[in-house]
Length: 259
Image (tube, rainbow, N blue to C red; front, side):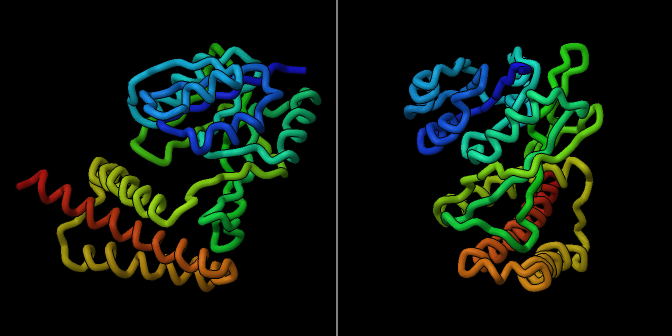
């Protein structure tokens, strides 16, 4: 059976990492790249016989690319510390790799949890992510360099596995709001770098008011986010707020850069 390496980047992930590593005890290599955790993250990683490397934080894409570059297996699985392989996905990956697949990468269906509830509707499931790919030393696959929402562009054919990757994303409302505040700042920087800011009042109103409102209506009503109860309402309400914050912060950042 081909060897599997798992690459994880961490910072203060003691609340998540043990759960993640428990679902990976069968992997051939687990590599954790930590950026200065002050909690028990590295202790937990070493308890699971993971290789731990310390490296200052250079950004999401750069840190993940560094972690993958240290992998030695035939296949690489890139995970976040708050993601867990369901038992079904563990079996499916092992069975798939043993069958000598002809594709070069696999998308994993991600099951996002919000306040402990699986968000099934509103466009949040299946949230397919390209995470499992064949290692090629001559043509390494890498995450695109961007401040947030880093993605991978595969070199060859892909397929999608049918079992779920479980994303323990936001266990509390406070963690979600803090996360969206931080990510909206990073998203705002992307907009500024791409020149997608406007000082016109109509564009400003559209970006910070109408687009978020339409996003909420589309996902919550027409894509049936309302079926996910209170958690679904809060998820879509604050996701719309995130969109508004991102455009407002981009406008403010552009304004300050030109003042």
